[in-house]
Image 1 (cartoon, rainbow, N blue to C red):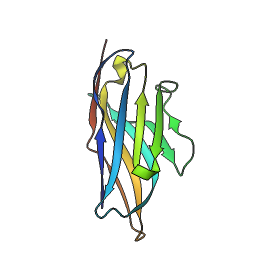
Image 2: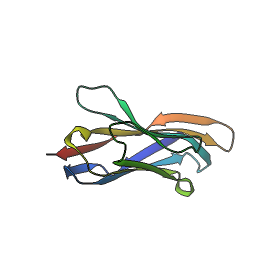
Image 3: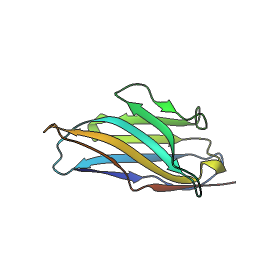
Amino acid sequence: QARLEESGGGLVQAGGSLRLSCAAFGTSENIRNIEEMAWYRQAPGKQRELVAEIVSGAAPNYADSVKGRFTMSRDNTKNTMYLQMNNLKPEDTAIYYCNALVFFWDSSSWHGWGQGTQVDVSS
């Protein structure tokens, strides 16, 4: 089992920036690697949508609505992924969730979600 802990949300004015973090923790610090990482968001009254993802070490993929403004990265030494969000717009307001597929040294795996972090962008 693992868990994902998010941080970095908050209230920001349009044009501002925020950096979200999502750290993966195993029950006994036995994480081997995180194979798939993704950020999703869900705005009020809307379905959850993919924002950015990194699969198998490839370059990140981004939703068209955030291309050129958001940057996803990872730090394998900390089992952490990040989402740098620049030039934020009111339509970016949502709860942001991280999602990851985690592999452990005992060959087991876990696929789950973080608890979500609220991002509010005022106009």
